[in-house]
Amino acid sequence: MQLIDTWPVENAAAAVIKPSGRVVAQYGPVAEKFALASVSKLISSYAALVALEEEAVTLATPVTIAGATVEHLLSHTSGIAFDSMQIVAQPGQRRIYSNTGFELLAQTISEATGIPFDEYVREAVLEPLEMGSTSANGAAAGMVSTVEDLSRLAAELQQPKLVDSSTLESATKPVFPDVDGVLPGFGVQRPNPWGLGFEIRGEKSPHWTGAKNSPSTFGHFGQAGTFFWVDPAAQLAAVALTDRNFDKWAAQVWPEFSDAVLTEFAQ
Image 1: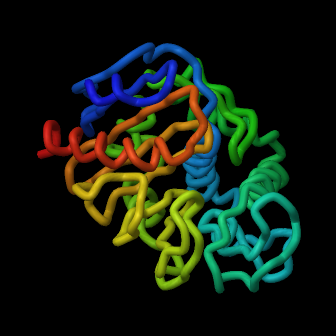
Image 2 (image 1 turned 180 degrees about the horizontal axis):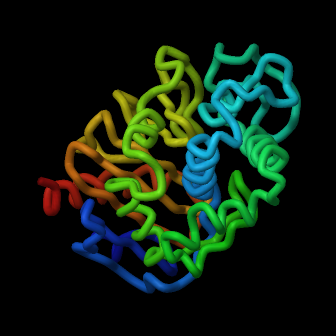
């Protein structure tokens, strides 16, 4: 964890979590609130899995874009542009990372349940996991949380209690596995595997996780200088939140940090 001392940030907090929920290492102000940016999608995605199990929606539920479904929105294959409703590809043909798609997902679940999505997230995920310092506003990139709260989510994503383990297993395997696309900040990946809201490490290069992370590693990083990964093969998860936006600095130091964590704490 001492590597974080070398990061060019003013404030950072981090933790390493085992499947039991035991925090085996932590750094910095773990109770301080940080903007999550796109790490918000992990929380939204988990709420969507609850909605799927409740049969409020199905993966085949259509959305307002012709031919697109809930499955397309979760896996960034709807063809919707990053920040508008412009259609730039047919559903299922390209991996086009889309904040707009996640906001449309939130709208779809809200309409199906009759519950505002932020309230649904609180009831489905935040309250059961006792994530009391986490906001639920902004399905794609607007949430705020702490390392303490995200450590509880990390434990849940290793030993799920809110959804069936088979549901999470399916969600963290590639959907439309052969689809190419751009991984923001790291260029075109061929293929660019993604699960149901969870980015899959696969064989991507370059990548924000480490060379020691297994291909089954899933998670997300955010423009706010945040990341969250779970490596099932290593039986380990890591969370890091900072106050400096993602840029070249993060692409350089995050993989080194992840490799150090795996070297020290993995099974």
